[in-house]
Amino acid sequence: MKLCLDVGNSQMHGGVYRDEQLVCQFRRETTKASRDELGLFLVAVLREQGVDPTRIERIGISCVVPAQVHALRNACRIYFEREPLFVEAGIRTRIRIRTRNPLEVGADRIANAVAATLHLSGGNVLVVDFGTALTIDAVSGRGEYLGGVIAPGLGLAMDALGTKTAKLPLVEILRPERVLGRSTIESIQSGLYYGYAGLIASLTERLKAEAFGADDCRIIATGGFAQLYRQAGLFDEIVPDLVLRGVAALLDFNPVAEDTDGGLDA
Image 1: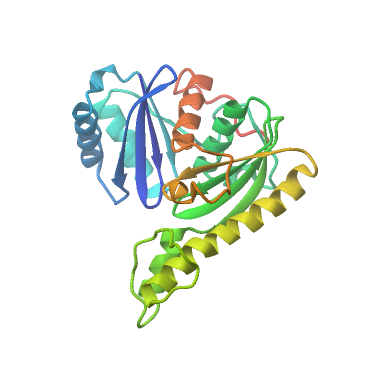
Image 2: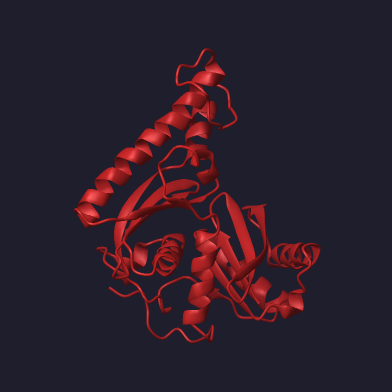
């Protein structure tokens, strides 16, 4: 079995795959944690979901929080006796990175691109990831990561309104029935939900034209707030574990964790 972790700025999303099947998943708030805190948490959460930690054969990690890399690596070594594979420069990805500096592309965006390429088996795709930052990435049917867009995520926008203004409160992010808010809370919720719907619709339309011209492309969404827009008609499909699927595939592409021959193709 493979343990796959997506460590973002706000949350750690983890899952265990048996062959291609996701057998369990879990989330934890991303906070500064020691090797032992992380190791004990991972062992405990797997046991709670009926997975024997000693059956974990490989561990893959997409991490965009550099301060946690050392603790994560040592937690895997000590509590699982496994050397983790990090999504980073030097691993085989089977995609080509067509940006000005391939080394600066985030691990989660690489994992998304890998998973989307395999999921669609050759089609053009835009991947919309609702993380701490909202990212939209273009991946060609030829397996080329072309670049994309980064914007503040919904949670960041809500936090900014609640903490950087004197009278606006923090609110629950949900889909209002009407754009016209009849209270301060309704107005904020409307601005967040419908504002980001418009942002995503505009950006995906422009990215599709610039990246693929008249060619077809599918739009896949993933991340925490993707389900909020299920009925909005913005996406062709929502794949909640897309990053984890990419990490699992990268483990297959790199059969020995210590073998880092190859790299992020320029």
